[in-house]
Image (cartoon, rainbow, N blue to C red; front, side):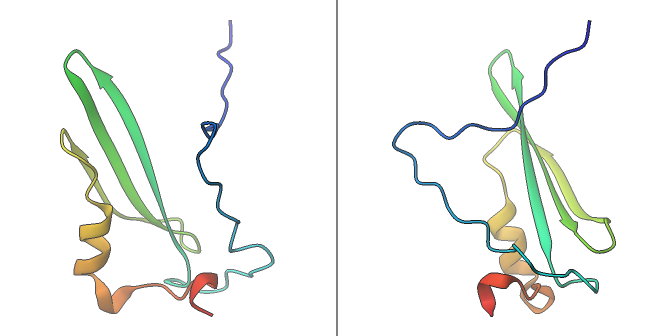
Length: 90
C-alpha cells in the first residue's frame, strides 16, 4: 500500500503570500536559495530538520537537526555577503 503525500495546507485565517519567482530563470549559483523545514514528532515535542539549498546547483548549503526552534534566520543573517539576489529584491 502506498502512502498519499500532500503539501502543506494553509489554516483558515492565515495569510497566503504570492509566489515571487514566477517567470524567473535561475541561471547561476547563489541567484536563488530555498529553505525547507521538516518537523519530526517525538515523544516530547519535535525535532526540526532544516536545510538551506541553492536552486541552481541543487547543493545543500547548510542543514541542522535541532530540538529548538529553527535557526534559518540566524543563518541567513550570519551569511550576509552570500545572500542571493531573488525576485523579491528586484
